[in-house]
Each structure stands twice: as C-alpha cells, then as structure tokens.
Amino acid sequence: MKKLAFISLALLALCSFTITGYNVGDKATDFKLKNVDGKMVSLADYKDAKGYIVVFTCNHCPFAKAYEDRIIGLNTKYASKGYPVIAISSNDPSQVDEDSYANMQQRAKAKNYAFPYLFDESQSIAKSYGATRTPHVFVLEKSGNDYTVKYIGAIDDNSDDATAVKEKYVENAVDNLLAGKPVNPSSTKAIGCGIKWKS
Image 1 (cartoon, rainbow, N blue to C red):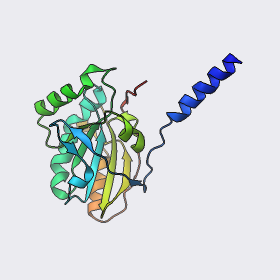
Image 2: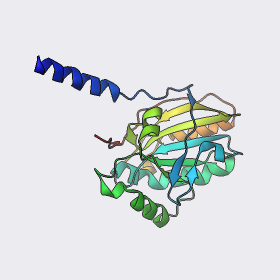
Image 3: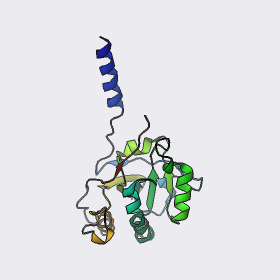
Image 4: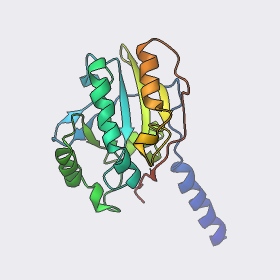
C-alpha cells in the first residue's frame, strides 16, 4: 500500500511538472522580469516593436556560449527593424553558480549586451513558453496587444561552427515576417543544454 502511495505521489509530481508551452500560432502572454540593470522589463515596453526574438539562454552552457555572438548579431541586425532580442535566463543558480544574477550582470557587461538579459527566477516564463534548452528561441509577431508565436526552435543548423551554417532559421523567420511572408520552417529542434529546473 505504501509503495502504491509513493508511486501515485511520484506520478502526481511528474504530471504537475509537465511543460506544455506554446505552439506556433499561439498567443504568448507578456511578462515582467528583472533585467541585469535592475529594472523590470516587459514586451509592452517596446512600443515600436513589430515583434521579438525571445531567447532562453544562460551563462554556463557550452551551446549558449557558442551562440552568444550570434545572438548579439541577431539584435544588431534586427532591433532597428523592429525585432529586438530579449534574452532570458531561467536556470536555477543553486545548481550552477555561473548562472547567478550577479554573474549574469558581469557577463552582460563584459560582452556589452545591447539587449535585456532577464532573470526568470521563478522559472514560470520558461514553463509557460515551453522552453527546455539553452538556447531556445521563440520569435513573436506583435499585432496591437497580441504576441503571436511564429517560430520556435534553434537559431541555425550548426551549433559547432558559425562559419559552416547553411540554414539561419531565426534570420529566415524574421526576414519572412518583415516581408509579409509565411515562416518556413516554423519550428525546429532546439539544441543545447537542458534548463536547470528547481527541485
């Protein structure tokens, strides 16, 4: 009987932790998270935005580090066109100290981030979006007060070598949106470290 009760509790815990998240075409909800400068940031703060490149990333992951300059490049290329990068770290810093808020601040300063680097301390935003990897990208299109998910997945098709990339998924998605065309592919598999969830 005790064994059955334990299994039931374990299954309940697993079910309560299931991450569903958004699908392409869903409406994403806004959020308000603390930036590395101490200010609270939300999507609504960007009055002139046409959309957003929301990137779940972190400090410590080798994949996130490999993509860091490409993330910076995305913001450089698209922020002025109405699609700024919004970077979010959702990792539990008690598991990896390198992902602490203080270290996030240091990293953003050292790399001169021109975009917000937000701390999802409760991990609720990663869960609501369905982010599971670092990096994991969600391209949103803004229409009035609606934020529609138009692309989910990887930044491009080569996490090892930026010079060997053949398909730039995020760039293609944003270029298509700016041109009023459908996004294709609208989803790919995110490649990276698993988000470090709180126990």
